[in-house]
Length: 218
Image 1 (spheres, helix red, strand yellow):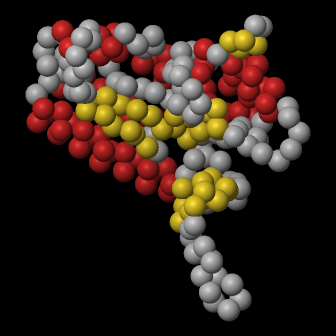
Image 2 (tube, rainbow, N blue to C red):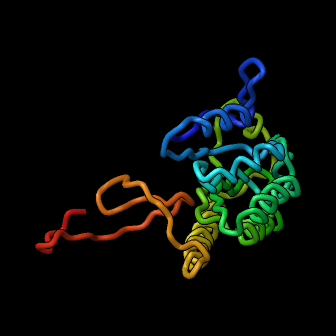
């Protein structure tokens, strides 16, 4: 079961907030698992963090970063700081050192300096995102960002995007290597399409299996 939507962390229905909703879902009897999709780092409660102790809740979050620079986050009007973001990552990693994070990062937002970009690279390395969905900023008509000064040249945006994509690949390999010889190397998986499956920690693997007559079946 994938919980998805826009700003899902702000869900509210009467006296039920997002934490309560996830808790109620996890209390449903049965052998299933729950994955929380893309979520904003608005500041999670201790209750939310404790929910990941339930084996039904996948230890993975696609935690939107957008930029590793507080200066850029302010210009984007994001409602969090890098300090807040890293604090949440640390709390989840203390409870589970293999907790998996993926993220979105925008490069080339108006006013992004070389130092701002270096900060994004540093945060991405420090967190060790297993996947970075990299976006080059693209201008939209009649938006606040369109009117902002200090536009980043297209070629520079492309170069920064390539750096981030390469880092994403390096991070993924480093994270996968951590799983080798891990204390609990056996992870249940769900078949998503022939030959591939996804672990609870949101790592896809590819494999081949055969019948007794050596006929490939997946």
